[in-house]
Amino acid sequence: MSTGAFSIDQLMELAGLSVSQAVFKLHPPSKGSRVLVACGPGNNGGDGLVAARHLWHYGYQPTIYYPKQSKNELYQRLKKQLEGLTIPFENDFGKAIGETDHIVDAIFGFSFSGEVREPFPSVIEALEKTRIPVLAVDAPSSWNIETGPPESGPGRQYSPDALISLTAPKPLLKMYRGRHFVGGRFLSQAMAEKYNLDIPPYEGLDQVVELRVEGRKL
Image (cartoon, rainbow, N blue to C red):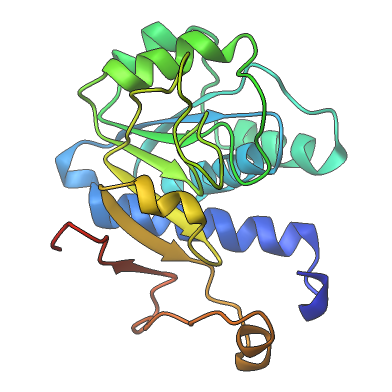
């Protein structure tokens, strides 16, 4: 991303905006305005915090689950922005999941590897079992970016209803069969050609576009 001279703040804002638009397309406020945004400690969680701010301005009622909060100044500013909008933070995921209409999984993303550590195993198990629609950000949490769901443990049977790939789809998409969006409308043609990426056909003001998943019709 440094090739395009984008700062982490810019990229996180663009990613979070894309996530919020995907939520709006999947689950407009008329279908239920309560959205639970589950955030991890890294950049994926930051994307979720940004998305929650935009969702509030769209008319949703977001709630944040953010149990391992980063002390990084950027994340602290994002949290303060949400507090300024009186968006609640909930520490009990079981309670929060029972009081929402839609879930954003922004726990683990592109850089995740290894084992799922506390307090997230029970959270991912709850995401596996819930009937509430879930949108995962960049990767379903616990999935390996290359090989998909883990062979055992939390997330083995986790397959969210929708996935938004940020900037470009990841190899794990080969193992995914839900609805798929791409977000991050900022790549130049030169950047796309350099990294052999196809820029999807964004329309109008949209920051996201839904793409066909192999084996699944739109």
